[in-house]
Image (cartoon, rainbow, N blue to C red; front, side):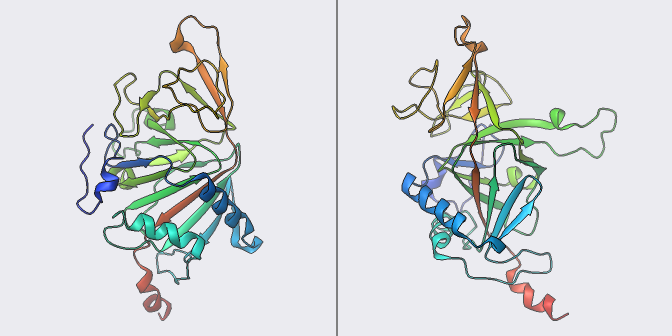
Length: 282
């Protein structure tokens, strides 16, 4: 599936476009180092307890202010996050604007979030750095208001899944931000199979299973795996337990990937920050 490239996106980012998806997904593996990941996790968990907001299925921290349709009272983003808001903004992700809001979500194993869109309060781009764990991000078509004969369940509206690995940067724009919903299943293990397509770093892959794909990464000696060839993916620091290890037909093999606590650092540009003072005086 062909994607257009926004004119303000830097050349460095263009090579990470996922061409097989609707407009527009950029997936940058190893966007940060292991040392940076460890440092960011330390800072997240050093935040004072009142900074956390507990929700059903996750807890979160707001940095930069609390977004509201009437405006946002801007707060200084701490230096440990500022480096990444500036780095991602320099890639042209926010059409020349500098990110001014960071939402840190923590998902423990067995937690997730229902399919949703991030809404019109932000510039129509969401960028996410994943820490501590992989996750499967599922995408869904919106509910069709004119179709009532067939039940529009999540299963029927399911479109594709993307395996988002720790230390990666994921950017959603255009239809993938405005139109399609995204969510994370509340599970302790993600099930992967050979039926998932294999996306290389430049997002080239074959149509082995239309409508579903996963971004894979090459195996290294530090990773533990069963029944994988060297050019297949294994998730960093996770042990993959294979079902039907001795199966004659390789395509029947299923792999269970155990999740750890996922910290999702969502960096965005809140569009109406300057309106807060006007709205507050009304």
